[in-house]
Amino acid sequence: MRWDDFRRSDNVEDDRGGGGFGGSGGGFNLPVGGGGLGIGTIVVLGLIGWALGIDPSLLISGAEMVSGNRTQYEQPVERPAQRTGAPTDQMGNFVAAVLGNTEDTWGKVFETAGQQYRAPRLRLFTGQVSSACGMASSASGPFYCPPDRRIFLDTSFFDEMRTRFRACTGKGCEFAQAYVIAHEVGHHVQNLLGILPKAREAQQAAGDRAAANRIQVRVELQADCFAGIWANQSNQRWNSVEPGDIEAALQTAAAIGDDRLQKQARGYVVPDSFTHGTSAQRQRWFTTGFKSGKVSSCNTFTANAQL
Image (cartoon, rainbow, N blue to C red; front, side, top):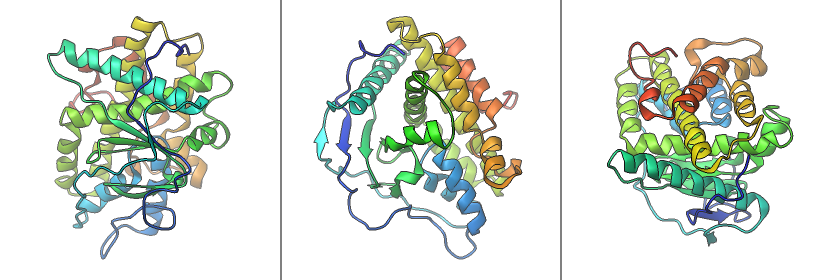
């Protein structure tokens, strides 16, 4: 992946080593109460949330909604980080470069559509972090918190991609890591377009957990498709994609499919509990976005959408 010429974003909040903001202990604030989710479901959703998605507490609360419980998010608040701006270390520089490139890419896409793109902030952390979606630990993996309009990332997840998930090898890991960031930016784009709020409303009205999960799958697959759009547009303007990069992204998508993760975790799969899509689905929708480069190709919510 060629990223040396990418503009470095100033929207990075670097709190690595800061130990998070308040609270104690790891994990999330799970919205579990009477009639809530069983511990088995929580474990599965937590594992899937680890594998490249939005805040796992959102996935869990989505399932909670259909069982009668409600989760109230805090209003967005500014929590000052230790350092703001483009970090100077190698990993921080890479993250700032990829984020800056997503800003320039989506800024152009929105401008062409007559709209203004409002970039998210990305908070680097180690250990645990507080957001408007609650506390999260490194085990949650990267996530996007809609009320904060922030992406939260502990870059140790990139090591997990190589070792635990075996999602990439060698230099191809750079593009795979960029895909992770672009997927989370995809959730921000969904938020700006009003898709996430509508999806949550649909989950509330779904009536059962399986139906709510199917909606979540469509949300995640669209974020994969949006990541493909970023790759397409970035390559057109900056010639950023090198041989093997797309294969690395597809390998990553396959490694974090619900079916593969569940098979690894417990030896069998439960399709009704899928929240991100199968390996094949994630690969298909990233490829769709990459080949077309158009938002219109990423409508995973139509009745005839081939998931």
